[in-house]
Image (cartoon, rainbow, N blue to C red; front, side):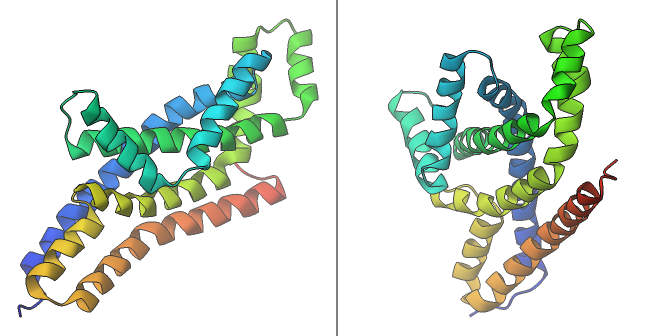
Length: 217
């Protein structure tokens, strides 16, 4: 039985690097796609709204673990060679796009309709209305929920270990299997997750307080 020391801790930190990178890619990629989803859900065309509603329902109504399996093994069935990194990045990006799209859809609809009507009266077209009037206000409204989802996304990356992606949780499993000290190893893993998530949770709470006072800047 070995001991938990510097080499083991450094290996966990390598897992942290991939956890943070996966979270960043999924959040940025999901944010870009999520904006398209949000705009689709608030479209004037019923067919577009229903199509994106089905997209959101698919990802919100199925477990993330199942989504990882389907994308990881589904891509292989299409005879496309891919590694665990690419598969999990695609899975988490699609997952994030559905949730962020729904969050931002609600924020867009929360902007008073008078704002859009006033923009129309000024002769602004749809793109200009969204860019200069609606989306800036919706962004402020959505910030607390968006930060909250980012925390959940970061913790959710632990499921990527199931398909062999070596992030923080998987790194903890590898170290635990080597030194046979699971309580120590996963205690450290839990502390690392807390250190990563706690500041974001505090920030999200402060944003929510500012929003409730109408002072979010």
